Structures are given as structure tokens and as C-alpha cells.
Length: 176
Image (cartoon, rainbow, N blue to C red; front, side, top):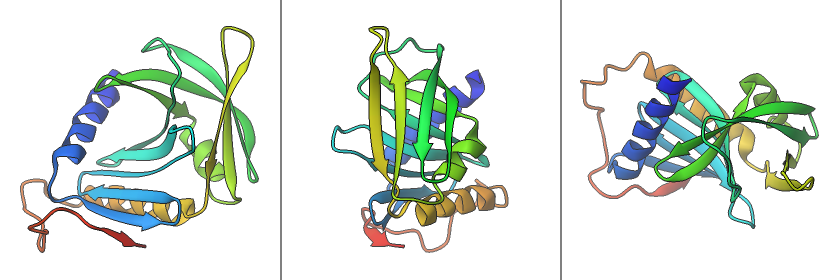
């Protein structure tokens, strides 16, 4: 898991610095495409984010919440959507000074995002209480599918070959 964390950090930094990134909107979701790195994400009213990040062909779902956790430590989380209710594992990961919780198994989270209006996550706190975050799934299915499609296509791209028709100005958001 360590190489994925390093790769994730490098790719997040590349996305934020790239002038060639494409930003697409899908209702309450944003898709950031950058060839070798692609992300679909949403935020809730408490400024927590939930999304999928792909670097090359490897993809993972994550939560970024205001919770403090110990990097490298695995925690349990309950996930609920119209399609799936299950317990997941999440690993606290420090990336660029921010704490992310990497969700596992990927397939369960993917199934949960494919139908319904909302998805929720409940994380047990040391105090015995739960931290609960809910996120809109409006636009999630096409946004996630686009990020995964671009990730699948990235294995066929030669990273040394520049992409044709790359924008010369700052990225603009378009609807998908």
C-alpha cells in the first residue's frame, strides 16, 4: 500500500499544477481529468469530500473529513446507500498535509455509488460517538464512470507523447 500512497501524493500534486487538466461537471460531482491522473469527487455542507482517484489504471475511493486519525492506521466505517449497506475498512493516509481515508473494498463502494440519491459513512470515534457524513449521488454515476474510463484508457497512452489539442489557457468546467 505504501507505493500507492506515494503515487497518490505525486498525482494529486500534478493535478493541482497542471495547466492541461480538464474539469467536467456532473450535477453535484466534479471530474478532473489529466491523462494519467483522474478524479471524480463531491463535497457536502460540512466541507468533507468523497470521491474516486485514479493514477494510471489504479483507482481508489477516499473520504476527506475533518477527523483526526493516525496515518497508516486502519479503521472500520459503516457505509449506507440505497444499493448497498456494509462495513468497510479505511486507512488513514497523510497526503500533502491533509488526512484522507482510503476506503476498501473498492467494488463495494463502487456498487453503492451506482443508484440512489445519497451515500452515508459513519465512523466510530474514541468517545463512543459516530461521525456521520452524507454525500449526494446526483451525477455520481456518469462522473465516476468517466474517471474510470479515462483510467482504463491511460494504459494505452504513451506518457512521453504529448496529447493532441491540449488547451493553451486555464481549464474550464463543462457539463458531461
